[in-house]
Image 1: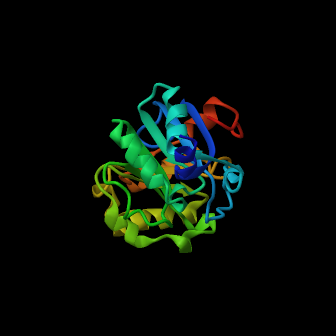
Image 2 (image 1 turned 60 degrees about the vertical axis):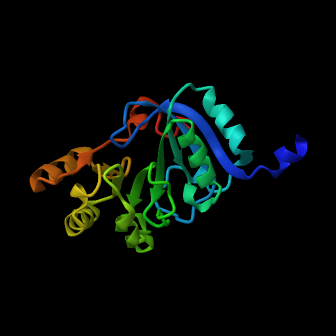
Image 3 (image 1 turned 180 degrees about the vertical axis):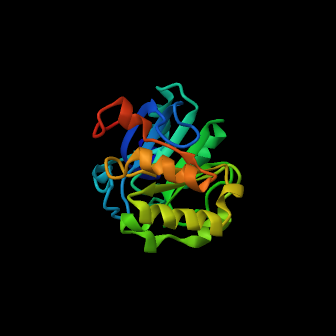
Length: 222
């Protein structure tokens, strides 16, 4: 048995926790989160830099056992960038096989073509203000479905206009379940963004990072 445990593939996990989903069309729902370690981007507003390197190796059964303690069938896999670890596909397959609803939050810079079509992709297209817009993999748009969501995190008016043009050019609102827009926390006025969306009649969902308004913004594990 010990030999079998040693042979189990392992993922590097930064944290596993149970909280209120703070973003997407699932906002407000109790949700179990699996945060994987590692990221290939360095967005200048990143609020999870602690996930770049800090983590421990866990097998899929160990991860599932911890998720079981939350008695919650809604699971989000996030990071960092979860698609950097090949083992994430095995974790997704196991969670789906158990009948769970699985979301994965990934940047627009990582190839989503291998993802199980039953997983809900929340894809964060990086705006110029992030410093990482050049890393977006535009072929990812061809792999989005009506189950998926696209997120834009905006720093300023230039980011808004860039995102607005991308939404229109690629007809995103008709390709995915929702197009999400949010502000970099404490950098862009929420009222200002809301007014821009209304002025342009943009077919998007304005969102706040709900968890940052429930708990102090730098609280981990929520």
